[in-house]
Length: 169
Image (tube, rainbow, N blue to C red; front, side):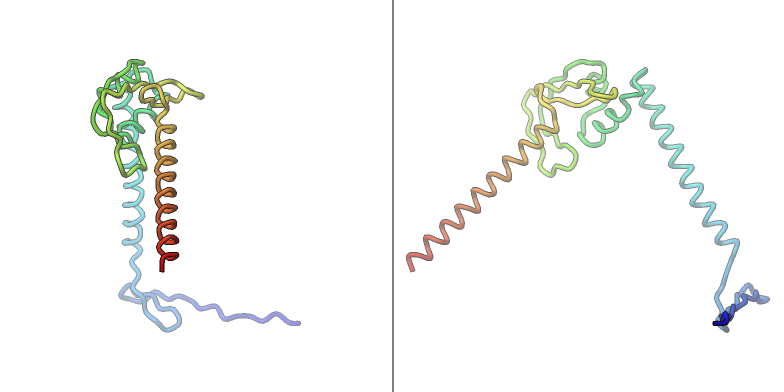
């Protein structure tokens, strides 16, 4: 079977910066594309610079604890804990707190009354946050399990009421 050649369309650049391909015209500006590419590169460089500055700032506030940058970042952003408290936790101190505490991913905050915040180093030099000696992850897990249990009990009661009201009719 002989090879069949498919036609290859050539692209001609016209006088006014138009590209002609298959008889249609499309405006092409190589300079504009290069500017867009450079803008994206500048955005990436800017983000890298911001991250570097942020890490330097954390190292300034918490000297000698580069391994705890993740902990400080997670606490300050996710757990909405003040910087002074984070600094004390990273220095191994305990802090007594009251008020609302909202972990990352939780919609409803915990109400704390003189809760003792502490931190401990876990595997690979990462720190974890504890409230009254209990891991925050475990507190969240227990709260979700309790909420699911209450929801299932409520649904079971509603089903029982529907069944009992259906038997009366």
